[in-house]
Amino acid sequence: LVLDQLTEKHPERPRYEARLKTLLASLAKLQQPTGLWPTSLLDKAGYPMGDTSATTLFAYGYAWALNRGLLDKAAYLP
Image 1: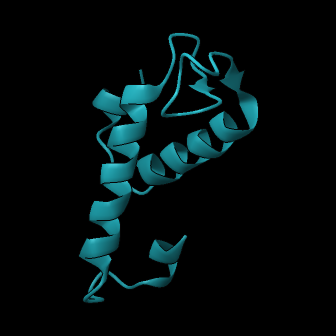
Image 2 (image 1 turned 90 degrees about the vertical axis):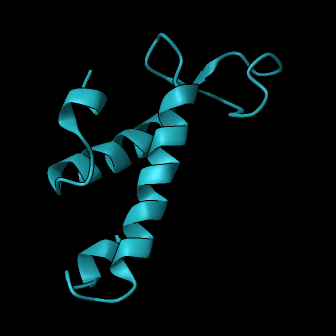
């Protein structure tokens, strides 16, 4: 939500946008076929069940970024 507070011309905005895009691209690779993210992002085998709390927060982050034009809808909406 820091990006909501920074103007388009703020010198730190590109850094925050890049960080958000990198984070969301990394998370997309970890999403399970069910649509949920695993309880442990780095140990899927140890904790194979999906986590609805984290999934809700991640989905919010994706929706937030998509609604602000920070992510490619063709790549992320499916």
